[in-house]
Image (cartoon, rainbow, N blue to C red; front, side, top):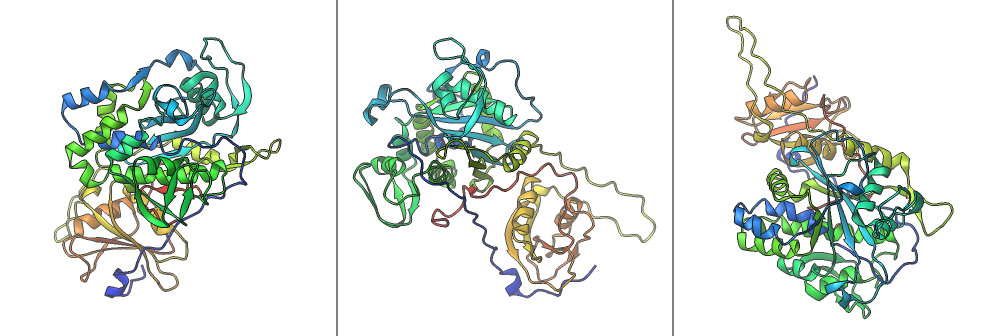
Length: 491
């Protein structure tokens, strides 16, 4: 194996390669004055934050604030199979003007303008929120209508399912179009939006230019800022003022950016370590939530427990890939060439058990005793991409995190032609390097005296960094957002 020249301090100080893909929006479409933006971020964050509250009576008081309904008899018998222990939660933002919501103006009927499938990998290793554009044309199955009758199977816009049969019809439609089994649903209206944002002491946003929108009563300066109360509501209400092009896909981009900021703020260490702040946020959130009756207290406790160690960096937001709908320029349809791999990866997402340590063979006199590796969770890895393949370091780092390794840094390195992948370790890091070598066979680790104590370095060469037995990776989707990203990075 070609040896890596002893790197100097500048090599180990290289900065990570940037990666900020952008989503392509379609031309503006006509629609109502404003849409629900960011409400479902409440539901994305609730289960992550609730894991910090351990007292049973605290759980009880929060659980009693959630409105629940039974939908089992409305889903039918022809449902996708459940293939693993992941959790799929359908998140919907309703634009109802009933009750408290009447203050936001009259609007006939009731729709779900925000539809997101939140997928939580087995063991709470990662989460991804998949947005379904409301004006996507889909084949809707027969649903139980609100009046008890049956609707016929039909070709319709995605958000029509909610109007016809409420959450159960949207649930049934998503299952039929993706072949992904859904476990629960959570619905949020916007009457509690301001109190939730205020419970977080505001949410950080970034706007590309100063905004003055009288209709939304919104005045914002250019750049990074924290919004609260009416200002936050105005930000998610505005359809003008230079924020996007007015299309549904542009709206979703802003919605995902806002959700990412809510998740980042809700999972901040200051929030999670302060029971008073955490309870205030959860109390405000649960007052605005409606869910299926199988999302019980015990289910929420179990799920929240598995999410305790999840950071904002392990939460992504993507939009289902779509393309123009030929019959109507104001509608879209799934781009199945790109959407199918995403749906299949979600459906088949599995977390493999940690491999057992290799057996220690009988030793010959004078033979070196093999190093016994530690658990991946005890290993800190710095990943460096020494190839010309953009994004290889970041993708490898994410795969290592999914296997339980702790990634300390992702960077790049110039290397000579023919350079092959190497595993190096600093003083005292022999057992940690052995664990990484077990996950990446074929790359015997070697000591690096100038390395940081206990740190393992993975430098990827032309032979890559293949992890045998890894589960199907979730494909990259153009425009995806990570919840730990800088809010101004993509403006």
